[in-house]
Length: 317
Image (cartoon, rainbow, N blue to C red; front, side, top):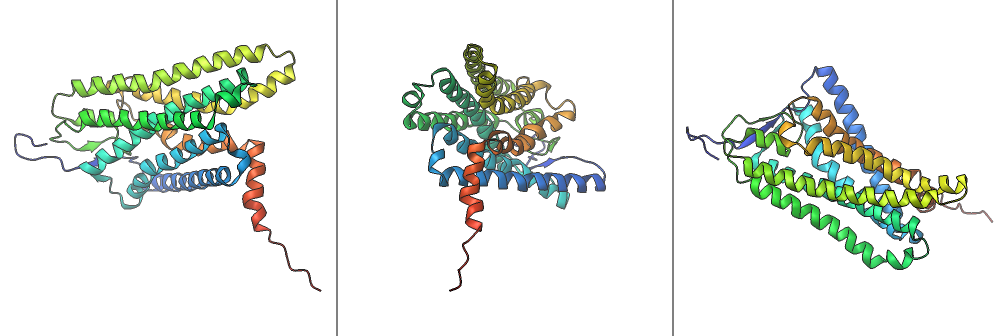
């Protein structure tokens, strides 16, 4: 990573959100509150699913994986941002930047595939209700979840293999609040065409193929719902998909806008706002959208958590 003068980049400086001290304080309070609530929501959901035998079904199995992913996801991006607000120091070592980039890409790709798996699960539940238990077996659910994680981490490894081979001679300022692909490609002083091509192709594969699976699943679901004779029946059936569909629209639209054209990214500062949407806001909203509106999950939560807080009192003789 040396340039002609013999110097080399040993660390990067993350710009974050350069604003007035008052606004930075408000942003810190906001992001810290969202961070704590996201941790609390996802831990409660994972605990509820784990402790409730009636929720040991494929649908909630995938939700548990999604909540665990969100916990990991938000811990990759938010703590460094909060630390920069407190210390006004956004510096990160080269190795730390590469590690953050690896896990961020891996978790983002895993979420894309996992959302597609959840859409397929809803397709089987609605279009093949009688055969659903025999089709979506615990064994298949485990393999699908493992494939989601495996494909995400493998894709990230391939991207990082090419990015880590690039040279960085300076400047070292990243106009973002975490290490991401496009700003690193913009800072390199070596030929980046091969790395950009690999990044673009893998991004399309990891985003578009799951998106095709989601669209195909929902096309079949809509056809099946339209065949239901009563309006109440159609509404009840579709309501089981609205939560997943809302998150899919938010997550895929922001991800496609960000990664489908890596060269055009970070031309404008508003791209950082879009990154906030899918790295901080979506992990915060997912538990509420998916589970907290689910009556079965809420009832299980009351029984496993709230119920334990009401200990029976001793009755005097």
